[in-house]
Structure formats: structure tokens, C-alpha cells
Amino acid sequence: MRVSTSMMFNSGLRGITSLQSELFKTQNQLSTGRRIMTPADDPIGASEALEVSQSKGVNEQFLNNQANANVKLTLAEGIVGSVGNSLIRISELAGQAANPTYSPEQRGLIAKEIKMQLDTIVGLANTQDGTGSYIFSGHKSTTEPFSINTAAVPPAAGATVPSYNLTNTHVVYAGDAGSHVLQVSASKTIAVSESGIDAFMQVKDAQGNVTGQSMFDTIQNLINVIDPSSGMSFSATELQQVRDHVSNAVDHVANVRATLGARLNSVDGLTTTATDIDYLYDVRLSELQDLDYTEAISRFMRYQTQLEATQLTFKQTSQLSLFNIL
Image (tube, rainbow, N blue to C red):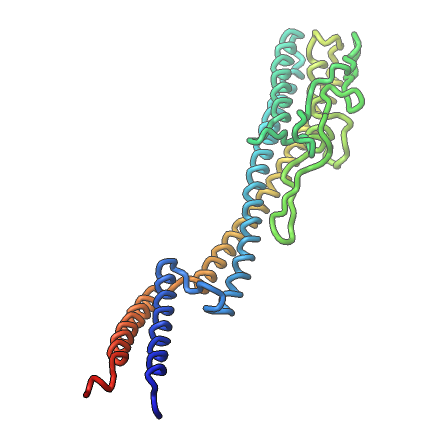
């Protein structure tokens, strides 16, 4: 076969160009640490890497939602726990006030401490999160949920029956009955708050029935029963009834806290699973995309040697001519 000068030149040039391209590709791989630079490098691997990356992105969004849910539930549980502690203290004080040897003045001092605890509970119920949103106002997160009802009718002079209930409430609620929900997995949403109605206004007894008094009403009724300046006549019977309502409030808040805690535990479990899945996605992406540096460096050196040899032989053969031997 007769090989023309142009054929020899083109063949040599193609060889040099091909090796330069492979050398450049390998150099880019080494500089980025990636095996797949374009889908053409490994169509199947590139397609799987895209799917894994998309799945990882969805999983990371769930992780972000879980982290947000954890913060919100932890805050709400802590606040409800503090309310529970105040209610327990109020229950203890109510027990002291039931002592028949106590004078009206002594019960008046107890009433003052209970009033301080009530103010504390109202403040806790109006807690805002780090963004300034009220955590117990339902969907109306910019509205302060609880305030003293100045239009409520106080007990009449000489009355023996407490006057505050959900109809004539001591503290009014300005929020709504909604709760904030987050998608924490592909198949699960979770409420990350409790409305003020469920948490504080509609206190339930042991049978799950609404008692007809908010915990604020219960506490104010307790104050009125034992405070001689309230205008009510002291009645041991009424005091016992109010103490029963306080016990209902203590149990109710404990149940609310348990509900929040159960949700928090659920989120923690989902976070553990999602974190493990995220790690597996990282491992698979590394297997698909990351470069084997040992193999790539060896390949780079091989291409470099081949290119140098090809360039040298091309130079030598391209200079051959019949005139060289004449």
C-alpha cells in the first residue's frame, strides 16, 4: 500500500490531537477530583448520579424541616413545662390556704404569690420565638394571644361562687385554633405547635371533657376565693372545688407537654434515619463521581509519554523526503 505524505501527516496529527484531548481531560479530572466531567464520559453513571443528587436534595430538605420542627417543639415543650411548674406551685399554695388555722391575712399573702404565678403564666403563654412570632397564637403568629379581659365581671360582694369561666373569662384569647405543620418526611407531616385554645383555654378533666374554665379563670377564681380583698366570702367548699380545677389544669398541661414530647421524639427518630440516608447518598455519589487519583495519575503519565513519543515520531516522519537520500 502506498502511503502518501498527506495520509502520514493527517494520521500523525490525529494521534497527537487525540492524545492531547485525553491528557487535557485527565488534567481536568485531577484538578476537580471528579471522574465524570460530562455525561458523555459515563452516560449510565451520570444518569444515576443525577438521580442520587436529586434524592439527596429532597432528603436534605426534610432534614432542614426536621431541624426547624425540633427547635419549635423544644421551645413549646419547655414553655409548657414552665407553666406546669407554676401550676404545681399554685396547687401547693392552694393546699396551704386550705389550712383552717390560717387567718384571712395569711390567705391574702398566699393570694399575692398566686397572682404573681398567674402573671408569670400569662407571660409564658405570650412567648415569642426567635423570629418574633407568638408560639401559642395558632396561625395568627403576629398577634399577642393572651390579655386580661377588662370587661369581665368580677365576683359580687359576699358571693361564694367563683365568677370566671369561658363565658366570663378573666383572660381573653386573640389567636385562632390552628397549628403550624411541617413536612418532615415523604409520608409524614407533624404539628410543631399547640394553639392557645388547646394548651391553656379548654382545660380537660381526667375523662377528656372540657371543664368550662380556662386555667387562667381557675387561677383567678382561686385568688378570689382566698383573698379577703376580693369581696367574696371565704368558703372551704368552694376552695376545694377550685383546687380540683387546679389539679385538672396541672394534669391537662402535663398531657399537652407529653404530646409535644412525643412529637419531638418522633422528629428525632426521623432525623436519625434521614441522617443515615444522607450519608448513604454521599457514599454512592462518591462512588459514581469521585476520581481514583492513583489510576488517574498513572493514566496522565501514560498519555504524557505517548504524546511525547507521538510528537517526536511525527516530527521525524514529517521531515522525511526523497531528497534526504539523494
